Figure 1 (cartoon, each protein chain N blue to C red):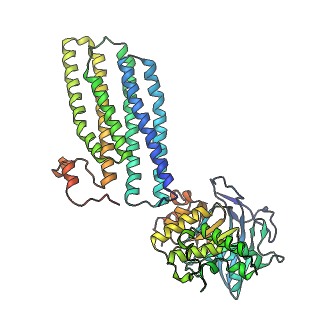
Figure 2 (cartoon, each protein chain N blue to C red):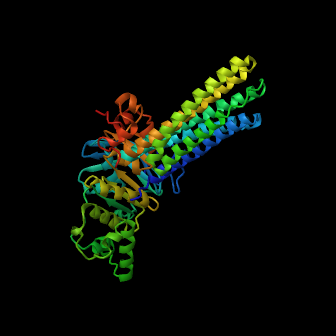
Amino acid sequence: MKRFFDEELDQLRSHLVSMGNLAISQVRKAVRALMDKDPGLAGEVRAGDNDLDRLEMEVDAEAISFMSLRAPVARDLRLVVVGMKAGHDLERVGDEANNIAKRVKRVCTQPPVKPFPDLPRMAGLVEELLRDALDSFFEGDEAKALGVCERDKEVDRLNKEIYRGLASAIAAQPDILPAALELMFVSKSLERIGDHATNIAEEVIYLLRGKDIRHAKRLTGESPEELLANGADDGES
Amino acid sequence: MTTMMATPAHTDSGTTAGRPEIRPADSAPVSGAEDYIRIRDFNFYYGKTRVLFDLNLDIPERRVTAFIGPSGCGKSTLLRNLNRMNDLIDGIRHEGDIFINGRSIYDPLLEVISLRKRIGMVFQKSNPFPKSIYENVIYSLRVAGRRNKSELNETVERSLRGAALWDEVKDRLHDSAFSLSGGQMQRLCIARAIANHPEILLMDEPCSALDPVATGKVEELIHELKKEFTIVIVTHNMQQAARVSDRTAFFYLGELIEYDQTRTIFMNPASEQTEAYVSGRFG
């Protein structure tokens, strides 16, 4: 039975779709601005961040209103809570894209660093993770969400490799230090975006199954998959 | 949130200084009049006991307004004054006035019967008559001497559709109303209440005797009915007030403590008493 306030949940989802698309677009533009050394495109990213901030506030307002007025329980409650948390993650993705964009001008004015193919590869992977995390949310796809958590390890590995590569390059050619440091920060921003994609994926699992898989291995000794396989499923409601 | 205003009895001028009147502060635009029902300087007494104190509020047209408050706060008493149901009780008296669409309900030229025709009422416990579903719906038309079969049939279908009950009973319209479930009986009472094209629907805890599924259906129905009727609902269920109403008035010991948009009352009320009541920390 469709309830009269279901359209409010649809509205919340719709704002999250807009946030997700905008966040991905911001990351893509920021990385392209860096690769193409295009300060104009970087400026667009900085302007676009305001839209993400506004959308996050709308999502928060809708979620708080829904909790206050509709007394949600079970899956409705999880959706509203997860919506707020995912909105916050997407806003932080926007901030990281903005951080990358801010560094474009500085990279352009410094002695160039030799091309680092791992950086665009990492950016591509991060964008995929973000897209998959959002798709898993809107499609209710648990396997896709778990895949995001797993593939984030590759992002972490690439970040470390880029760091090591840049450190070696600086040792060999000290005048690239300013630009190389900027690229280290860019790599760190991309790594953080991967973390936010992972957060969203973990929130999707909580939405679908009512189980919290965050820090699973460290706190319970079980992998997320084992945690989900064991015990009662709290999410079917 | 408050403005100073009082209204002389039996007029609709709505001016002059006096007691505080509470109006919604951040009202959403309404399709009808903001002050479709105007309550002015209203006091009410059972014998020597005063139970309502200087009430002033405007109830908007084609919106749902909820009255909430602990038992004995006067919310049902006020509701029953809107169609002068309290006139049936010995020893009552009132001061002040209530206007519906600009006319005082205490105007000596106004017949109480005609007033009540304009105001349908639904009670806490469903009270179908010991008749068929069909006869329950058209009871008021029968009393008025209406016999046109097609008019009666049309009224039954329109009212039952309006009460979201038609699909469940269309094949057994002549079965006893008592064959229905509790939730269906309450919706039948709503169908009966809207059969005579009232302007206003008063609901006095309409879901308190229903299970959650039936409650959900009645709440859906209220959401649909407000497109056509001005609805005033008394409820002890604060989640219900939050879900179904556009405006909420909180009463305590016969006084109107706060009246505002429902989202304001439940998200950021101005009064500490309201805050304590809606968050369950009252008393």
